[in-house]
Image (cartoon, rainbow, N blue to C red; front, side):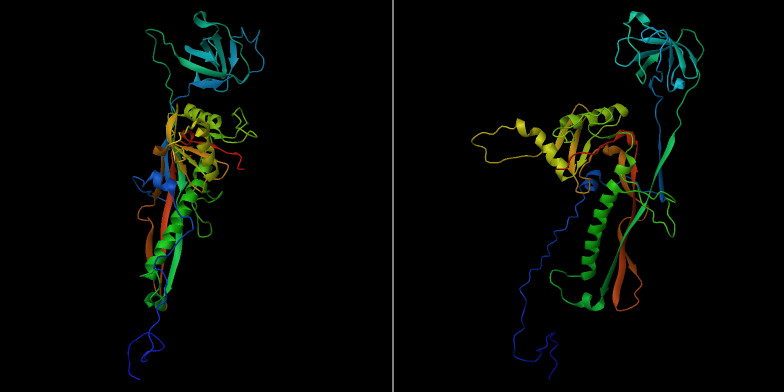
Length: 389
């Protein structure tokens, strides 16, 4: 039988070759989108170490709270007040208790005890109580006085850890050489698939990641992992109906505008940050869309129904609403995106790394190392414990 070179068992016969009717387009239905990473964009710089650090600072605080259950002679006339942090005050400070119109002036400080003049400037008397917030309006310095004692805050170094994301690829020589429907190069196809998976996992870890409790930098036996947004947000974590935070609608834990605006306001009060991003899962996104349902009007000529809120504008910021399927179903995240960055370790962006072949196959891995930089965690907020039914 003469050699024909045809890759069929019937080579050299008069039988026609049979071609399968299979589309050359491969459908992928698994979710792999990364809306939060796309919104944040590429970081302006890489991380230079597996322990990524940044520096934060604060101004001297101008509020404190009373730590006093009894007042002499009474809460309206007491002039000696005990506070939590006496070092925040100076002689000459004008202080407003709570939301009252009264102003008090500090005349002496001994540890955490303040001696004050009540009803300063003829202001109206107020009733003091334990845990009442005191706001320092400002200090009234004496003309010609010496410079006041120096006060300052200490800069703080915050940190997170890089996490290695890797996926192996192995394709036999025969598989690489064979004709496959929808795939020109099997190795390139596997690179694309693994890259989609790793980007999906990166967004999930940016939101929900947690570092190990011990040896967080990692070792030959401890896997290094990053802390995510949920773990790093500690100051502004709110639960509807608890600790003075307003309840929602329905059973008290449904997301509504009162809950959303309270979270934005309380986060705004903590910092000069500008919340510009709200990140939610699918269920809470539908709750946000419902905010405007009762206010929509349609005319007989309308033939399109729209039920979508992609931007939420309030007194405390204009926020783009991002839907990420990796946000916990009971959670809404409020971010100042200018203070959030997802960065690779220098030279460790996602890339294909060929490995030495030990047989008739192409071996390698897609690998990258990333971390989350989450500056000024009190500039961000989180509502948890929302209903999901």
